[in-house]
Length: 247
Image (tube, rainbow, N blue to C red; front, side, top):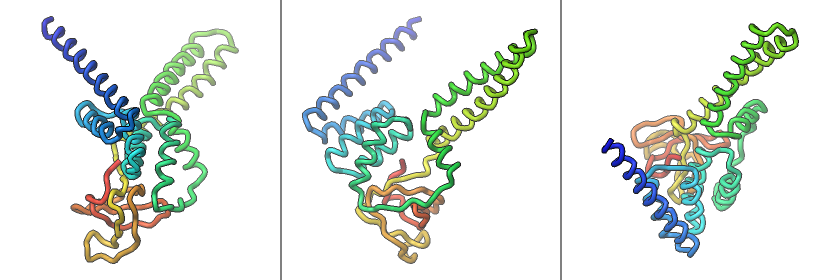
């Protein structure tokens, strides 16, 4: 019992300390002391953990400092955890507007765009909850079909159960995809002012094209300190890991 009391007291102290630190960061931001706000938010992410709100506030602080690559990085991290947050999306677009590279996106299939837009309507946990609820409704439908003698209710139970089962499968898939986005960090933001992308993982490789800070890339391979990256227009090549930061 004594250990439980100690644990409760410890959790309470940590919670109060966290709240006070957040308040300090908010006060620094409101006073336009954005460097201090960045330092506090960064220390919180290192010591306490991450959240979309923390990344969002950190992105705002970097944006005010006109450090647009860091702002983009943190907005991207925030939207990874909260893909349906409109405020994050708006601020991310504002930060991207200050990035040098304007890359044309390759046309994607309607199904791919549609699936991604649906997937980003909620977080992985929300989709998982919907999957559980729809499966429970499926069981209710089966119960109605098997144990009810009224034809109308049996039909409702049968067809409603099938719809709920299909929806449960779909939401499970979407939840898995969202979770994979968080676990498999395969995107990064260029942090160096300019980077020459090489044809091979070596300084002696042929120069292909140049990317500038703040540009988002997709990681497709890794060899030592070199990453093969791909940009939205389909071009790819190799850059060093020190020239970018993984989202």
